Image (tube, rainbow, N blue to C red; front, side, top):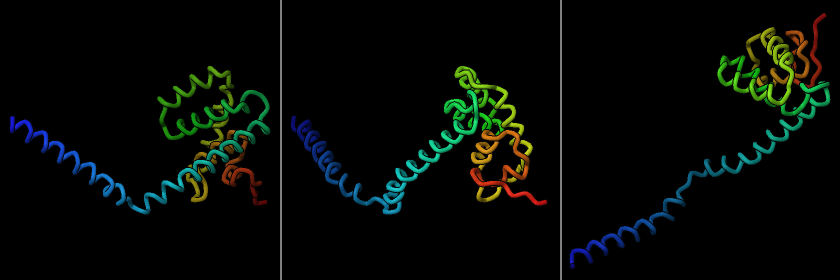
Length: 157
């Protein structure tokens, strides 16, 4: 009986030590990590607004179902996956793309535009920006897609 009380006191003592030690561990948070966690919501809001703007631009510039937000969202991701050779995931996106009634020909034209471009991305350019530019205008010439989306391309004559 004395040994069971002794075990119970030992368990209570260990539990109390853990409870008292928890706030000390919580206060030793890295200040850089705390700052990054505060910046993430602002970055997410900015990225969300950029995506909304891109969907609105596509709806304004593309006539027909290829300009629908769900077609733009799925189609651009699918073209990016195809470009990065992630065919399994791209084909799963294709099933959804077809289910929404989006035009398959626009995928082909966008991918053709992307492949015709210089495969090297400039430092200020991303693959997503290039895919979006080709989605908006699949007939872009190779030097025109290098310009930032929303800015006119310069041509040397």
